[in-house]
Image (cartoon, rainbow, N blue to C red; front, side):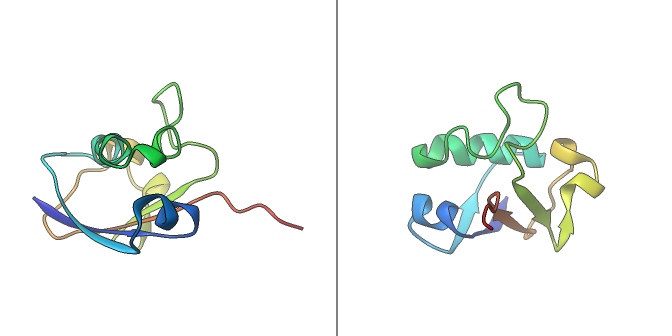
Length: 93
């Protein structure tokens, strides 16, 4: 299936584009994030926690404007033409 992946901040820098139409066989958000870390090596370890149990740091991932944490987390199922937004942890003061 093809998904629209929108990257923000350092994730955009790592990918080289803000929006990517990404062809994947992933069935869940977790599978997709693992695929993206492989496809874009600069994202490795930035999306999925080292233990694979959740998102890395305070990363926010939304599917069609809904935070996946409030859905099924990494087990959230993907739908064709879904829009996935990836926002890195924000630090500042």
